[in-house]
Image: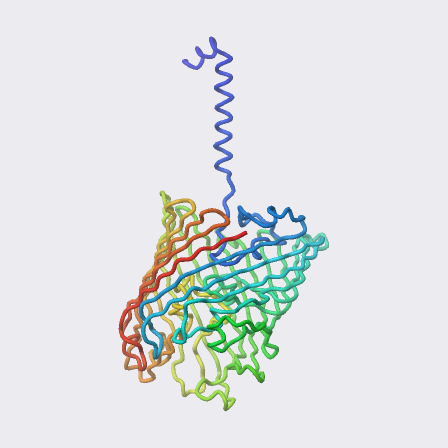
Length: 497
């Protein structure tokens, strides 16, 4: 009634108010439709931001970027990224070690890509080095790979091959690989150096239904390997291992039912020795499947992955004798989570991992699971100078809580317990083993907290703290360091241009 009286006496005012209201409603709608983006890993990642078949909408364009600053043509992409991290720990868990350690690992990355119609020519140069380590730090080439070619490739893609509706892409040359859960094949994120491969990859995509990747490659060996050269950040060009082949196929199926996605895959690794590089002659197939649903507000989500390995591998006891063992191993992961519909969007999940260990070192068999070229930070905490756990001889339940106090701030807390799957086999990352089994099988429990602040799409900051409560095995196994629990802390920045 009041509106009618206003309208009869003040039609013009009502029109203005109504117009303003519609504009306000429209602005609210536009705000609700604001594009949300996936957050790229806290690592040099510009070369992965664009997808030739799916477009460029998944990740936000860097606020400050060389392409716009230098007014480069549309056919040319260029970026520079720099990550600096300080990390320290006050004690150790590795066999024969004493005291703590610290390091300042640096990642500097330059990426260039030129496009001409359906073709792309790309190159990525990574300088991964460290400062602050000493001769007792055990520096290796997961931490240092100074000034080298990470990627150098020629690619061809077509979003609608022969009018079939299928997108197709072929990449030939040096490249990084990143598949599925990233537990077996990954472009490393927390680690300072990154795996790369020389080979050919073919990808076929049916939008929103499925995609398939097939590849044949030679893993690229990082050089130098000598500790003194790595401590001094010496540069030696990386080379593909011409005696080792890594190949496979990976099928992804989207929304097969009730929002559940599925992956099926098989990988084949065939290692051989060269004059400069003796391997374990790992010659086996790794096959597995993953079912998962993505976290959604006020709903449960889950992930289940099951992996088996079979083939042969050279014995560890005396590699020079050329004796091969029958290799049969397996891995299981399951997690279930729920996102609460409230401010901060808390997500609570429980998780469990099992990676087989070797039951008997004298039975001519090897049953220790091998994670191939996978990453592990997202499951088991920071790597870097810490990296206490890997997918091998492990029995580990835990829980995880994540929340976003601000739209650009993410905090995660993880608490896990670790037992050996086989008490007579090794805690592999620590190189500790009690063949008698008298040290028990409880390694300890780990509390891990991290917070990431995306200042904008070009500046990211992150800090984290991890505490390892040592269990009986970590304290009493032969050659174990003192029983002191471990505090690991890091703070890092990432600049993306």
